[in-house]
Image 1: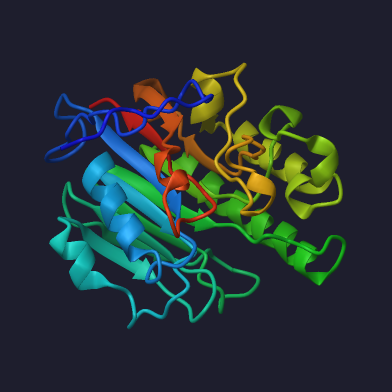
Image 2 (image 1 turned 30 degrees about the vertical axis):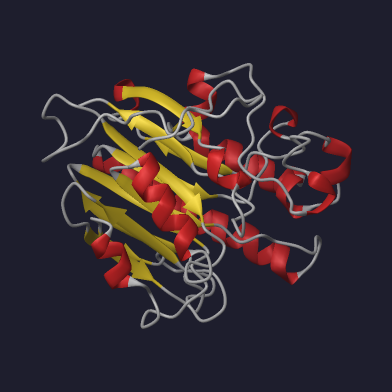
Length: 288
């Protein structure tokens, strides 16, 4: 039985609101709910993930920070939950996956072209139900300045190039995932606390803005331009209960998909569960 929505400060939190179920290919006159969830370790948090899939029922789910090898991915548990999956794993770090209950995802790319470090599993892309879904886990970049920050910017440059190619294709495309970028002051509870963090660095913010300026639509900001909305709260200092968060998980829609954007939000409910991720799932609904 679905529980009643939790009362939260975030006005776009449709905590386990009944989704519009998607069936068949996109464009069949119904909506698809597509979510992004940095699970922060898929195997230790598998009970959290399975509970969320059962209660929130996304049609497509993009996961980040699997922190497991390809062989250790819990494929049977995911299948038992009703989802087909593709994944790009890495021992102890990174890792991305795309789950679908509206047809098997057909992998179109694993890793970015000319990735500055292809040993990192940070990008996977698939055709799913008539959409092209690019799921990404962008480098953190800390400490800033330093080699890790340089790698972050180089990775963003490769992402820009690939994103432009997706736009040039004219296909309905979605870039979704943990971008590890706080785009503006509106996306952070206490800006001064993040002033020296790579996630809020001027260079990273500028590159994110340049990416959006290619023609992508930031789903949350398109529908909720004036609201403070967060997707991540640190584990310490009771940050979640104080709503001391940041917005770093994003969904960017291509021009051919953006007019079909019907809703977008953050499902804060699983962030309050025990042994949970420090992220909450963000989601979009697109019309057929």
